[in-house]
Image (cartoon, rainbow, N blue to C red):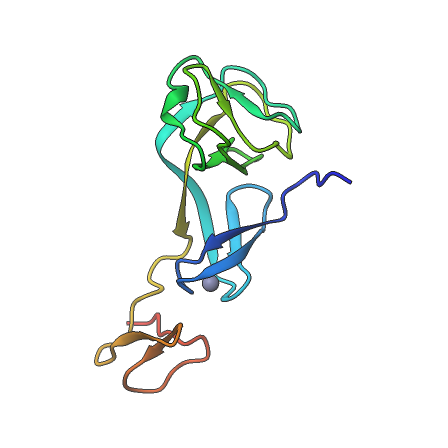
Length: 158
Ligand SMILES: [Zn+2]
């Protein structure tokens, strides 16, 4: 059975600093780490592009007017940065007007924007630590050198 909506993707969590499954929260650009449960946002970074044709569910090629060769094999894309965002992987370097990708799970209109995947922490200030404390990464977990460690392991209050 085909999965209509990608429910999770495997990415390096910016907070855990290790590979985690990210669960899509809103079907769009908001995802949550399965490890620390911190929300992240899906965005794009160069190279970016705009599709010049629809991409049907199951489709394996993005059509562009130009610039397709900027997208190289193995590059991970955030495609359709509106409400139907999904993650696609470039399967081989594109030609000027066509980019081969892993099969799309959703249907997309023409004119949608996309680009190489960029993931950012949705909430700012996560790495701020109360004065007098120093945050260390030790044995894969964030810890505080001095003072009491709050339940989440970080102190976001200044
Ligand atoms: Zn995490």
